[in-house]
Image 1 (tube, rainbow, N blue to C red):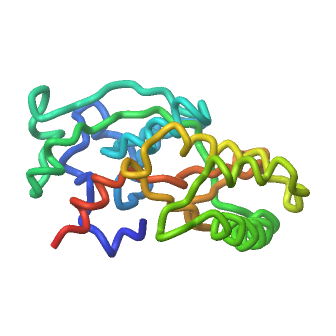
Image 2: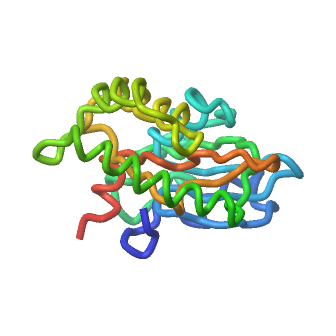
Amino acid sequence: MILSEYSKAIYKSNIPQEYQHLKFIGQGATSMILDYDATHVIMLTRDKMKKDWLCNELEIADWIKTYDQDIDVSVAYHKRHKVQEMPVYVLKVDKLFPLDSKNKTLARKALSYYDKVVAKFTKRGVTDYSKVSSFLEDMEDKYGIHGKMKQLFDFYCNYNPEQYTHDLALRNMMQTIKGDLVLSDPVADRELIYYLSYR
């Protein structure tokens, strides 16, 4: 999600006291990143789909703590009441890096290719990701990321489509220090995005 299109889910005033000394790295629509050490960052997010993707599917993050308005109203505070009711998750995430030129080129080509595959199985705005995943099993791995894409589509199959928004774009892909491409932020909590974009 592009930050300018939405209200922020996390304010700097939401940072728990024990992390206020950490350097601010950046922010997206649903999350904020703080520098933790040479190999990790701290992520504050209200996006439970992102938490599940990073912690349970990619296994590159540890879920440290959850704050809600009953535990700490200053951490949970949001000017939109429905957003304030959503907890703030604190994650310790493996440090990732912007795509280098080689991975950027590969990612652009791959995204165009997989967008066409997804379109084959989308009717009336609803995609059958189980069919997408099955289709990929018989397709040539042209860009070397078949496994990563199939993992994402299989992940979607665990949820009701009303729970998530597919948000796979170049801005939501990063790489490890070794240069391995990571789908770092391909999914968002649909309810959270709705309340952030509500006018």
